[in-house]
Length: 145
Image (tube, rainbow, N blue to C red; front, side, top):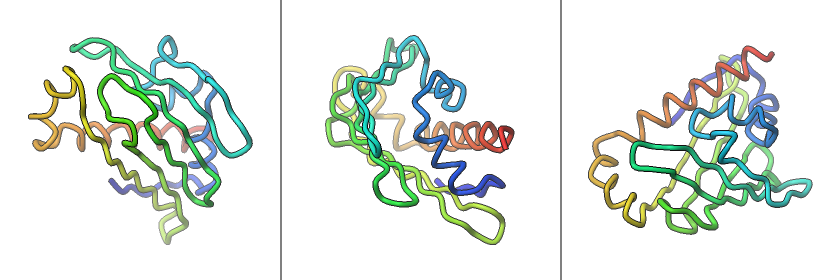
C-alpha cells in the first residue's frame, strides 16, 4: 500500500513509533483498553495491541524496531490471529509531492479466528482496511503538522 503525504518523513516515522495513548487516535485498529507497552529501548518497543472485532478480541504482541533509517517494522511475537514472525512495516521517503509512505505487511493467519477470516483475505478485505487505516493515520499526522 502506497500513499503520499504532505507530512515530512520524520513526522510520519515519529508518529509510527509513538506508543503513547495517542496511538489509539492514530491507528483505528489499536484500542487503548487493549494496548500495553511491555518494554522499550532507544530504537525498539515491545507492545500488545488489540481491538474488538465481531469475531471477538483480536490482539498481537509485536516487537517494533526503528534502528534502520526510514523504516519502522513490527514483528509478531504472539497473537491470537497471526503467526509469530508475521510482519508489517511502514517506510517514509521524500518525494516530489512530499513524502512517499509505504506499508508492507506479511501477515500469516492462524487459529480459529484466522481460519474464519482466511477466505476474505484474498478478496481484498485486508487491503481495503490497510488503505483506510493508512489514510486515517496520515490525516492525523498531517493535521498535527
